[in-house]
Image (cartoon, rainbow, N blue to C red; front, side):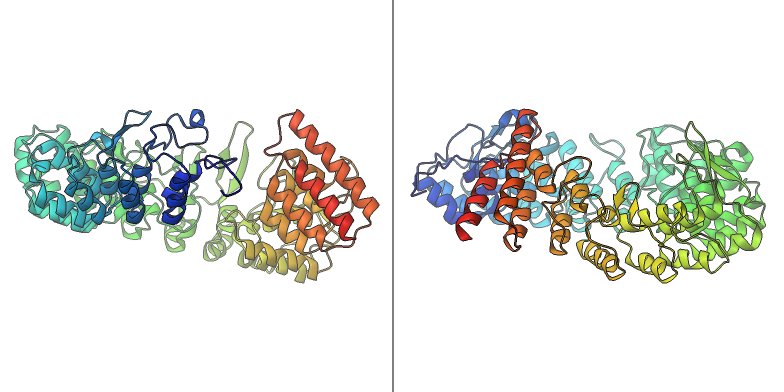
Length: 635
C-alpha cells in the first residue's frame, strides 16, 4: 500500500481485497484498507467482475459479508466507521438480506444480540422467503432460536412461519431445535395453516428417528386420519411415513379406512433410498417407492408383513410392476428375512430392472448370504446385464469381481462356469482381470490363484494396469509385478505408465507411493518419446506435476510428435502454477544456458500463441523472461 498499490486491485481473485479480508475475518487488514480510503458504505459490487456472478453470492455490503461469517471484531470496526447496522440488500435473485438475517442464518448468537440491541428489524426477510427464525432453525442454531423466541415472540405468531421453522429444523435433523419449537407451541395440527405433515415426512425420509419420535409424541396422528378423506393425500402420506418408520398401528388404521397400498409420494420424494451397501450401485434404486418397498428397504418386518398381506389380497402385481420393486429394495437394504418372505410369495429373482435390464439378483453380490438364498430359489447365474445401444454384456461373476466381493465370487464359481468376454476395442469389460482390477488386490489374487491364465504384457494386463494406475492402487500394482505380469509394458494407450497415474480422490500420498513403486521396479520416469509431464499438463494437474518433477521428470524435454516441451504446453495454457513449479524445478538442475534460452524462447512463443488463440488463463511471459535473466546473471 505504501508503494501506491490500489486497494481495489484483485487480478484473478473473485472478490476485491476488502471483501476478502471481511470474509476471512482479518480485522487488521480491513482497518488498514479503510485507512487507505476504501469506502465501507459503498453499495457497488465487491466482486471483481459482477457480470460473471449475476445470480451468485454478491452480498454487496462489507457488513453483511462479515456478519454472515461471524467475525464480530470486523463487524464492530465497520460499525465504528458509520456503516448502518440495519443496512439491507436485495440480491440479483430477489433475495432480501441484512447483517441480522445473515448472522441468524449462520448461528452467530453474539452478533444477533448485537444487531437486535441496535434496533435492527427482526422481521427482515431471509433465505427461503421466510423470516430469521426459519433461517436459524434450518441451520440448527438452537440458542439463536431460543433468543429470538424469548425476545420476539411475535416471530412465531404466524402459523405458516412457525411451521416452516419446524419443517426446516426437522429436515436438517436438528433434534434440540425441533424440541424447542414444539415447546413453544408449533405442534402441527390437521386444521392449521402451514405445513401439517411435512416436518414428520422430512424427518422420516432422512431417517432422523429421534426427530420422528419427538414429532409423533407431540402430534395426534389419529386426528389427522379422522380429518382426512379415505385415500386422500393425507392418508397416503401417513401410510408412507408409517411404512418408513414401522408404525403397525397406523398402517392398520389407514388400510382399514380404505387407503390404497399402491400409493407413491405425490411430491416425488425418494425417501432416502440411498445405497446401504458399501460397493458402487449398479441397479437403479432411484424412484418413488411404494409403502411395501419402503418397509422392505428399512427392514420393518411387522409393517412389511401387514402391507404384503394387503398387497396379495388387493393387487399382487405390485410385487413387480412399480420400481423400485419390493425385492430390489429388500436386497438393497440387506434384509434377508424379507427377501425370503417375498420369494415365498412369488417374487422373481430374475426380474430385469431398467435401465440396463439387470437381473435383480445381481444386486446381492455384496450380500453373499442373500445371493446364496436367491440362487437356491431360482436365480440364474447364466443371465447377463445389457448396456447401451451397441449392446455388450456383463455377468454376475464379473459384477462380483468388480465390487470386490470375494465370498460372492467363490459362491458363483461353485454354482456355474463363466465365459470371459471377448477382447474388443469398444467392449467393456474386456477380461476377468480387468474386472478384478476394480475390485482390488484381493480379487486379482483370487482370480490368479483360480488357475486363470493371462499372458504377461498382454492387452488384458494393459487394460487392468490402466485401471490400477489411474486409481493409484499400489497393492494391486505390486501384486502384478510380483506375479511377473507387467512384462515389457512401458506404455498404455500411447501414454507412459507414469503419465497414467492418478487418484480420483486426490490422495497424493497414494500417487507418490504408486510412482515410487514403478520406479522401484525399473520403470523410467521419462517415457520413450516424451515426458509424462506432457500428459498431466493437459489436465492442469499441478500436484501430480510436482510429484513427477521431484522424481526427475524433465520439463524441457521435447515431444517427438508435438514438438513442444511440457513447459511450452503449460505456457500456452497460461497456467501460472504449472509454469512456476517447472521453473522452480529447473533452478535446482544444471542446464546449459544456450539450451535453456532455446527452450524458454520456444515456451514464450507458445505463451504468445495461447494468448492469440484465447486459450491462456494468465500471462506467463514475465515469469519466463525473469527466469532467464536471473539464471544468466547467477551463472
